[in-house]
Length: 122
Image (tube, rainbow, N blue to C red):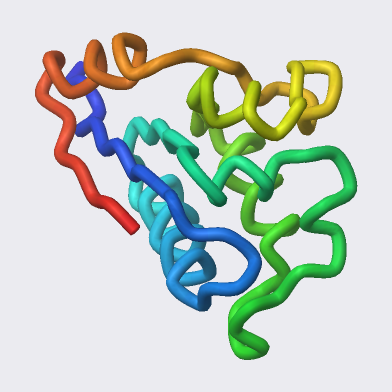
């Protein structure tokens, strides 16, 4: 059996930037295409996974709501990692985050890159 191709998407954009919607849309396309996906959230991107924060967010009205796209990524086997200092500066612990999201630093993301993952950054 052939191993899935790995992809890491780094999202630094938050609620005020339509590029974050593009990033989540590409994340959804990647899991639908069979990629082994890891999303690494940094800077304002961390705010997406605070419980309740993305429930109504839709930076691009032609894309599905962000909460729906995040749920799809996770239910399709994608992993979402959050930068520890980025979470800490916002006062977030794993208790504040959507279930299944993990606070894990650059070494965890870079381990996937070492395994041959392609990377995209938004």
